[in-house]
Amino acid sequence: MAFIAGIALNVPGIWYLDALTGIAKGKPSNASALLQILLFSVIMFALVELPIIAYLVDPQRAKGLVDKCSEWGHTHARPIAIVVATAVGLWLLIRGIVDLVS
Image (cartoon, rainbow, N blue to C red):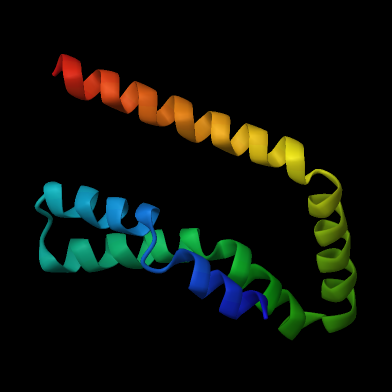
């Protein structure tokens, strides 16, 4: 379920398209562009990939860990949302100022 949710929520999201734009602006070779896209995708989907790998290695331990993380996330949803929204807002503000100045 997490795998499907991860795909539905992230492809082709704004971060993915922004990363592709950044890679294209760098005008890398085809091999370098492919490597950068693959690396970005692995990092972007790490929260989906790691639990799947953990379930393959040790299903019982992975279930306990995922349950604890899920409970923590539900308990702290509001502060997490505030921190993420603030960080994204600051990043966009700084990026806008830099674009205006340059």
